[in-house]
Length: 295
Ligand code: MN
Ligand code: MN
Image 1 (cartoon, rainbow, N blue to C red):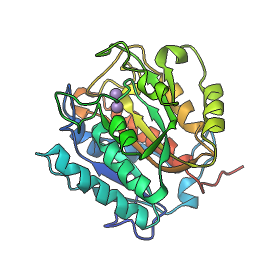
Image 2 (cartoon, rainbow, N blue to C red; image 1 turned 60 degrees about the vertical axis):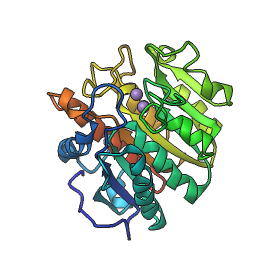
Image 3 (tube, helix red, strand yellow; image 1 turned 180 degrees about the vertical axis):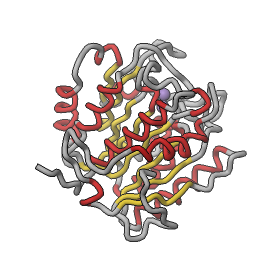
């Protein structure tokens, strides 16, 4: 990832990139299992300094790629403890986990590890979808139920959840209301159209305060014009500029982990979705606590 050194473990690292080549929680088009390798491939273009903010992440932090989670590709529930324990090892080494998905199912076990380490966290969730279905086809472990599981298991403080970019068609008219009913905030795509998201992120920073926050970015939050390579595309989404504004607006928050999920390379012939994913992970890296800025 990013032409960084490969390491076997997170020992001695401040930040550990890791892949989760998992897509058996996908409800529509499969293929996100190939996300980590393509995001890594496109990330070879990234240079070390952020020219807009002058962030110098590699001068500030020891960062490496620790490879992929050894998932069981035949059994989604069996992957929950595998992913949880992998991320727990990263956290106990003192490193910030930066996940490369994989479908969104993976964020539930990641949050199990994060909450075991930090207690219940706030979540900034960029997505076209709310991902709060009680089950899908009767199954509790899937990419559309991870946030429901995480809140039910008290891994997440629902009053410190902000969902951004939700849109499209639902299974029920109330699909986007659950997080709001628990005291969290939902910002639909329509509320973002034609706007800079800098003012929104000022509000988000104020409301989330100094306590730990996890940032999960589903690439389908971005419009399929920019990010066609994903399993559940929805029209009229965020622009890539707005995606960048959201992440840059997280600077100053106590980020304890991030992920970028749902890049599905079979639907990404140009590679631009994976390239966007790689850049969004670089943006995430640049707003982690401890990053220095050259001014
Ligand atoms: Mn999602
Ligand atoms: Mn989604």
